[in-house]
Length: 88
Image (cartoon, rainbow, N blue to C red; front, side):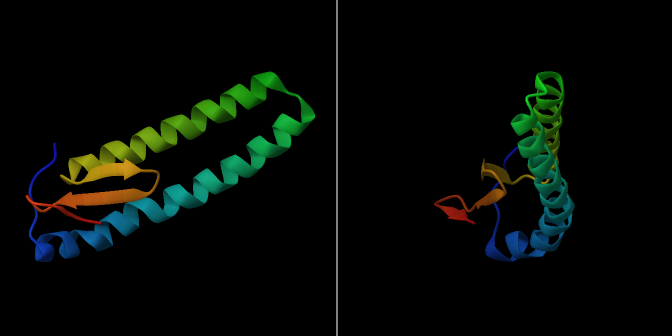
């Protein structure tokens, strides 16, 4: 659930956001690379399985960020509601 943050509160959460995001980005990049290779080979079952893994990974990351009270505005883009704008 989103909440309102002061600048200091948003800044204090950034190390946690980075710690949650960094390994997910690395895994997503690896899965994407594998997906590209598999798509070229025409293995539709494996392609679908990799797409599902990527989707699950991103959904999992989104949930973790939202549990902090922040909002996910796009892939790897996190905003903190300041009440009259956002800290991004």
